[in-house]
Amino acid sequence: MKWAYSSILALAISGAAGAAYADDGEALLATAPPRENVASVPLLALSPSSFALQAERYLDRRFSIAASAAVDRAAGGDYQSLGIGLGVEGRYWFKRRASGSGPFGAARLDVNRTSVSTAGASIGSAWSFAESALCGWRWIVSERVEITPAVGLVVHTELATGLAASTRATGTVGITAGWLF
Image (cartoon, rainbow, N blue to C red):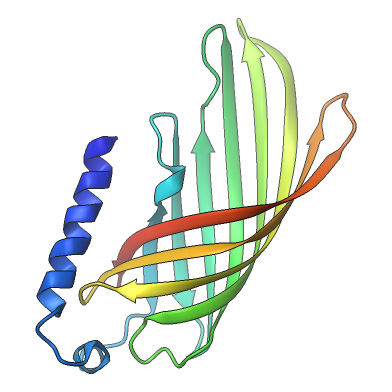
């Protein structure tokens, strides 16, 4: 998986170097046709046992909506697990999206179902729900490559078979790298 991180980093650096010749990055990107869609990978969700994808669509100059899907097979040893998650996020862009980059605020909802088994017999399953308030910044490092870090607060609620529900609040940090089209 190290090659994936290295490849994305190399792509971002080469894109940034290519865009560096312009005096004004927004002027350079303003001449390009507008990009209405973004396909990205949440980099902190990558591991040998998990993967996530996100798709974003600009609705107008101030709003966009993103949807994500994730798969996680984290259990090991005598146990098997499968986690499947879906998420939706609404973003408000604080400055006009003429260049495609800049600050944003977001509200996000994630739903995940995880099941655990051993020797083919189910041990149990759990549902988790996460509501997040985020702020972040998108950088366009070349005409089509984006990097978007975000931080925020999240409230997790977990409902497991045979156990009491638990809810906790925590901070969150994330970063995506993707392709604008």
